[in-house]
Length: 456
Ligand SMILES: *Cc1c(COP(=O)(O)O)cnc(C)c1O
Image 1 (tube, rainbow, N blue to C red):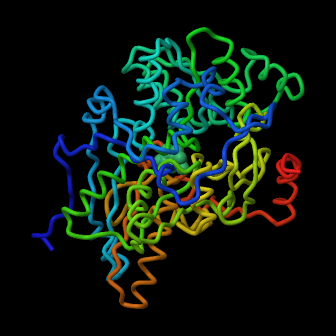
Image 2 (image 1 turned 120 degrees about the vertical axis):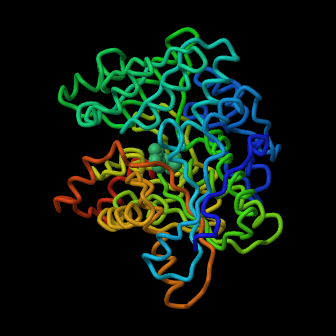
Image 3 (image 1 turned 30 degrees about the vertical axis):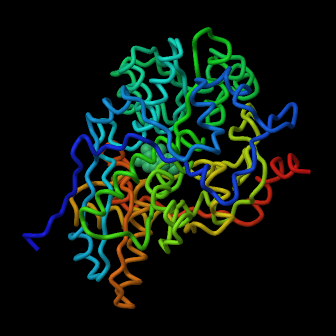
């Protein structure tokens, strides 16, 4: 195979000039987000106090399929894009499968993940609208790191609320954020009213994305020239991530193939949307038969076992009500190592597409993801992020099916990030100290109670 091309890269001028807005072409549009106080469908203006205005318009844009990438953002993309599309000959060989496996390698960004693709435009629009400070929440720290760097690029100050337990257990991502100059505060903290309330009730609260979101939103709404940003779930984040799939489409053409199956891991849906939507437009518009598979943790199964209904995006109930597959906004996911996949909801676009049968979801136990990640590392040399290993595990399942049937299917998956800052998790796996977590129907029903009540 020495004369076969293994890696496809685009010249600079081929980096996309537009993001793809699938909302404009969906046969059934997502239901509208609802204002929790007025119970009316949300208008872009309702979001202006929280997010940059252009991002609010993108969020609710159901008419324009193509949205121009600002020149300043494209210039920043050029520092690490295009990311390579790689033919995984090593993995194919290790599995003995006739399938052709490709992966899009988003781990080559300076952050080691896809998150920068949206952090850059979010910081850019804030800067352009006269904002001086940005704030956000982060769990394990991938999004916080990306936003901290993007803020630096555009001369903004960044304040990041990091879930307290991660702040203490994952010191390296905290130092990454601080290296870029961000101010990092463990949440819950005494710096906001929301934080004080939580700590008064429970001085030893470990924090959650819910507490951190509440504190970041409060800071944004009480500080002049300060906006909040979010790294996943929202439709404008999915929009920015389509740069992944638009590049992959051109790179698959260079390889002379078109995917039969497209796979990505699923936390809030941004990297899945990014790789899938540009290919899904050919399914919607031309009836192509590609299958799209989202891989989620067995312990946080919103797509495979959640309910489609209106729910809050955060634990405190500060966000609009979103029509989505959810496990309930006070769902407490098990402490798995794929921190980026521990979120209770799925975002409005994905939820509608899943409901309408354009995509499928699979749930994967933690140990299977680490087996898959280790096999991939040995075959391809890259140690994948525990999140990305969910996509690899789903890819391996598909490739082994091809081995049984002898089908030469073309499988494309997104490698959302590398795992070099997650070696503590690999350590535990190697030592045999990791376990699977699953949840019972009773536990699920209990965590759905508050969300169910919102829909009566
Ligand atoms: C944050 C993150 C995810 C999960 O987020 P999505 O919005 O679902 O893409 C997956 N992989 C990596 C490496 C991440 O950092």
